[in-house]
Length: 106
Image (tube, rainbow, N blue to C red; front, side):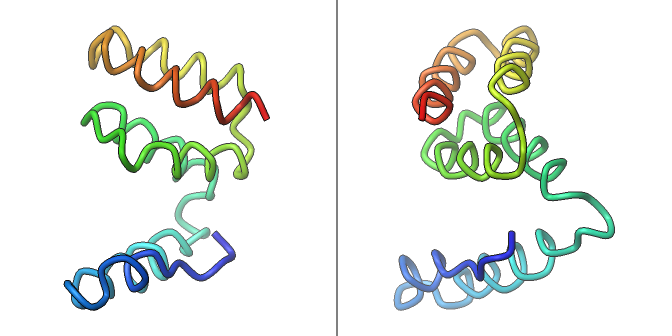
């Protein structure tokens, strides 16, 4: 994640400045930037998995795009979602597949 994240400040800064700080400066500025612990690709794999598991589909498109940028291929995302379907539910997998198809069809 080479680019500085500003979504928190842009979207919530006036309403929830502390949350915006944690989102942009801590989560993305420190945790995601710590490539010595986990690669961006591994972080993407984990984050996409967590979002699908929770059914957090509002944030999923952004993180699917980041996952693609971080090197996760279409066959890998398809295998990931198929694996998850058996553990987190068929409806979550369907929803995730519909989003992933849009992103990997570019």
